[in-house]
Length: 444
Image 1 (spheres, rainbow, N blue to C red):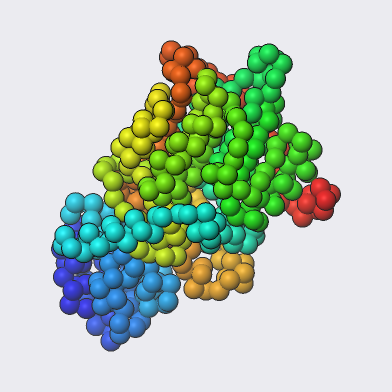
Image 2: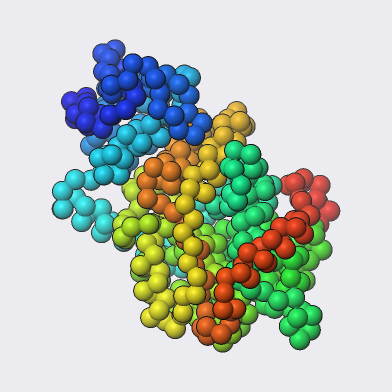
């Protein structure tokens, strides 16, 4: 407990944090006398945790990138009501922020160098490992994702144009799709010489964005992803909506896609590519896009310099994943024929999205525990709360980057983005498919 006590004494400068060790000894931190510094959704009162295993404190300190997450997963760390693991994580990271955006980070140049090397090796995503990594993350049961995502299963940041506390997750995800679609500068067939535009959606998820583009613009869309159940679900949706002739989905690595496309979208994809493969990504997508085409990329990002993925996330949630700095994206794209026309740093939107995902997960605790087990449920809570703090108290943002091969492909000013987004929002949404199994049966 000595090292954990030393860290918490230094870190907790606001509020009150109480730790009861496995032997019953109590340690208190912070100057507060019971008040709780507010954060979104936070509850008043001191936060109290209990370490139930003799190795818990040392495990947390000895393995700073893994320890707290594993201790919570294994039941070695319990948060006492009325608080929960989200309260604890946001409280500690809010306090640690004043130490230089820190928490229990690896210390010393050698340890940091080792972490970076391991993370870079983990980011080597050849075709076989890329598929394995995608299946690890996205081939979990369909029922899990429908418990905490919106009805369209958008597993990326929602866009909160209005107050997040009065905007539903469903509305914010619809607004995100409109915002992205507007940046693609698509044309309907009647405005394109009678021909539907061809769109490639790389990392298509559960198909919502591809179906949205088809509905709004009458374009032909090819969505590709590496998780078999995701693609099967996408195909079921397209058949159920009667657009499977125009919107096709393939279990395919983007590196194997051939043909020519007027537009390319990648939403939540670059985090899984791996920095070593950025040259290949930009070179291949440049080859696929028409000379007057547009590509839009939406991904999680670092608002500072390049870094590395923490060991807990690499091991349990996104193996092979890496969140890029803007410098990494722009530098590599420029080397392969791209011109960057628009960059938007989207701050805090993902923290509100993750908060809602967390709340919906808690609502379905019993069901998710039955699907998997209590350890998986705790792992998922820690993932969502930990990710939220990165976007709320850390330096994570979302990048939306617009690329062209010819700068004449877009209007001179950005008004078209706002005007088109407003037009799309006024039109509504793709007909809702509420994951009713009868719809699947009808489609088949």
